[in-house]
Amino acid sequence: MSFINEVNIRGFRGIKQLNLPHLSQINLFVGQNNSGKTSLLEALELSCRPLDITQLVITSKSRDRVWNGPIRMPTIESVIWMFPHISNEKDEAREIFIESQVNEVKRTYKVSCTEQQVLQSISRVTRSKATNIDEVSEEEVRALSIKMEYNDEESKREYSEEFILTDQFRFVRDKNIEIKILKHRMVTPIDHRVQPISARHLTRSIMSGEKNDIIELLQKFDKNIEGIEVLSPDGRSPVPFFKHKLMGYAPVSVFGDGVRRVLTIATAVLQCKDGILLIDEIETAVHTKLFEKFFDWLVSLCEEYNVQLFATTHSLETIDAILSAEKNNLEKLIAYRLETNDDYTDAKKFVGQDLYDIRYELGQDVR
Image (cartoon, rainbow, N blue to C red; front, side):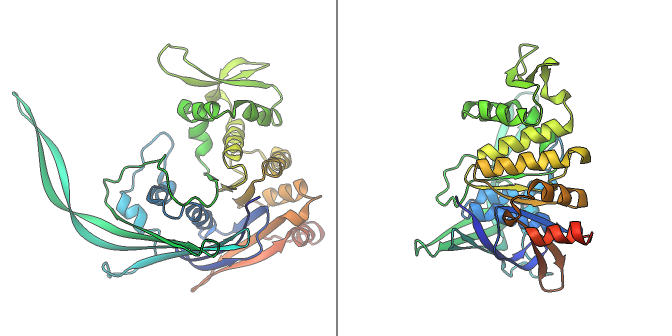
């Protein structure tokens, strides 16, 4: 199994410096708002694909998504706010540094950027009553010069890529990237609103041979689910449906957020088998009465599919539910409480048994 054993982050979003040693299979991050929990997950996501400019842009925009809406922040602004902020020094280089240890092998990833102006071809269509004329002209536009560097102790090689990034960047999601450290999936607090009702997303999972596995996983949470199909009631638009013992064929969209959240996470676990799963605000859409059942289900999936879990939470009920789910395997659980200081992010570590004692013996709040 590929595990991230340790991670060291410098200069990423609000994290000036953070070191997390001795990570485990189940890792939980707590802390006040703006303490760096989501930033930590994003840094881990970047470290899995260190020379992928598309991954850099996707990660930079992940907080700006809205349900069924566009990505709104311009690419340049979105990317530059991942770097340390330097006031009034546009020509000064900014740098992100992420060092991880995967299966005891140290891997170093650096990204630097400087702002500049470049000439870019701009196409405009001029319309008149008679014709449409496509005019192409060169204009000076704002750009980022991005340099990515990666090396690891195992190969003893250094890799680097350089890019000129403008707001006209287009995503290349299936690009064959040279360096892929780990399979990974990030699940955000809004993904269950979008992905489970996306015919394209579900079709991709079905065509990859995961359909039966997804059904089997969902049945652990709702035994009445018999199948998943992509149907077209109007003959034009494909729509994902559950085949349900009590409801017959019903659109996934009519089910509650809880079921859709489970479908999103079940699909994510399968897609990152033998890799890492990153879940922001893990308690989202799950009723407090189902916390223990949900986390027992999730932990068992991670163990079955050799997945290392990194999750954030604000909730004491969530912490207690995970402790209950892992009460027989507390050695696999580590929790960190993140606190932001002037020059670094402090991470107070609670190993599973210690966390259990603090919560159940002393009744203390570890958030």
